[in-house]
Image 1: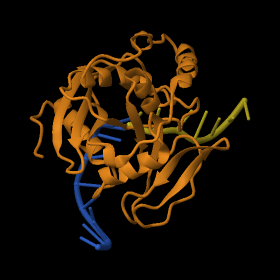
Image 2: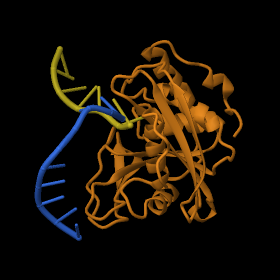
Image 3: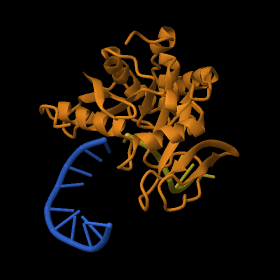
Image 4: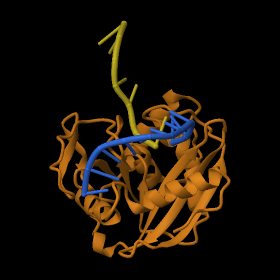
Length: 234
DNA sequence: GCGACAG
DNA sequence: ATCTTGTCGC
């Protein structure tokens, strides 16, 4: 797909954490929450980045699946050297550049991007999903594996149960049970997507395992490329 | 001041 | 994120 929407901001890579936080505060104002109807979504891209122990390289992957079949229809990867250290809250500055590279070589433009991280469930309401959504001006949502900010009551044990993730008095996401009896994932919307629609979509994307299929595919692909192995079986 | 802290 | 074996359970 084509380049980013806000190219000016995409090229604005901060030099230090202070600049990065300031940039997040400015960009947070560009985020919107539009309703999304899961029935009208036909392609979803899963995104993930892998790292290796004794290797400085990092590999970003984007895998596009069709709905409701959940079949892989496109994929792309990008190898890079991290340009920013891992700092909680500034995660996007580390992973967005390589993710944009991978996304840029996709031959199709997916309806929604599912990120490994959060959207507005973030100290400055501008996590990875928000960041990517604003730069691409596309629908994005985040699925986290562990809580970052806020608190959520444990959802009931059955798949589909959820509870609001509240931070500083605001609902910033949902703790959602995608598998009965398995610890929940944290859905955090953020750009041109609403929380209810995002949760319903995540449930459709995760019919069998805890994590959404698009993310599982991206995780496996990025790991295979990093290990210099041929992409594994479907 | 101290602890927590997405991946 | 990544380093790692076996083991309990459906």
